[in-house]
Amino acid sequence: MFQIWESGEPARFVSDAETLRGALDKVDTMCRLRHDQAAAHLEQPADGYRFEIRDEHGTPLASLAYRPDPSRPYQSVIVEELLQQNDS
Image 1: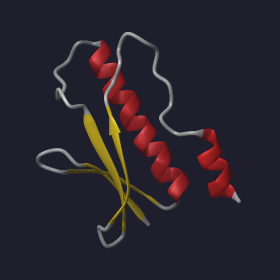
Image 2: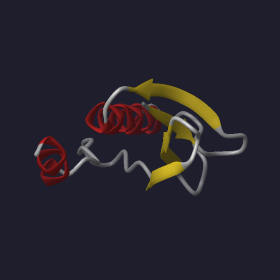
Image 3: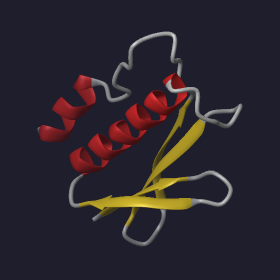
Image 4: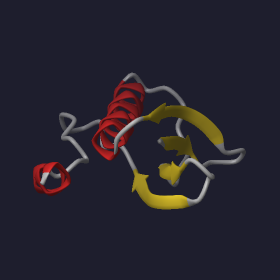
């Protein structure tokens, strides 16, 4: 079991996932949402967003800092090679 958190102030639980691939997909979805919000000119933090994947005990396993660039189309933050390694 994995937990996905947006680790701003205050930290906010986003979702959980059964697999690492599922957790990565949910982080990617959150980044796409933040990109869409930036493109719509909604308020966003100057330093971007930070997401964490945590284990079932809340221990951080991975983190991602994301700053949307609404001048370009969204590009997935998840590298396909990472997903292929996870499937092996």
